[in-house]
Length: 171
Image (cartoon, rainbow, N blue to C red; front, side):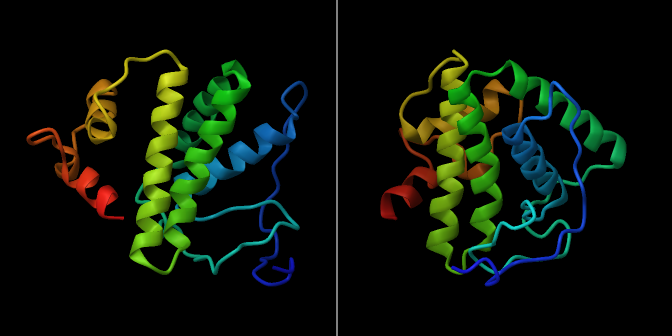
C-alpha cells in the first residue's frame, strides 16, 4: 500500500527527553494515547492499512481525563522501562491489535485480531512470572480474576469451556 493510500496529516507532537528519548518507547506511548482516546494513532509518514475513524472513542470505550491520561502514561512508561525486551514487544502488540481489530470490516477478522490481543496479553502475564490458567478457555476469566476485574459473561467457565472458547474454536 503506498504511503499516500490511507494517510493522515500529523496533528500532534511527542517529545521525549533523554534518557527516555527512545523510538520504541515513543511508538508505545503513541499507541497508548490512541488506546486511551479510542483512535489509531501513528507516526508521521506511517500509513494506515485500512480506513481509520477520526472520532475519539470509536475503537475503544476507555474514557479518561487529562489527569488520568498522564497517570496512565507515567505507569506505562515505568512499566516499559522496567520490562525485558520480550515483554515490550508483546505489550506493544496487545495495544496495537486491540486498536487494529476495530478497523477490520468483517466480524471474523475483528474477532481474530481481538483474540490475538488477548493471547498476547496472556503471554505478557506469563512472561512476568504470573500464574498460568487452565487452557485457552480459562485465560480470559483467569486474567480478569487475577487483576481484580469483573469476569465478562462470555468468559465464565461452564463444564470446562466458555462462550469465547466456543467462538474461537468455530473460527
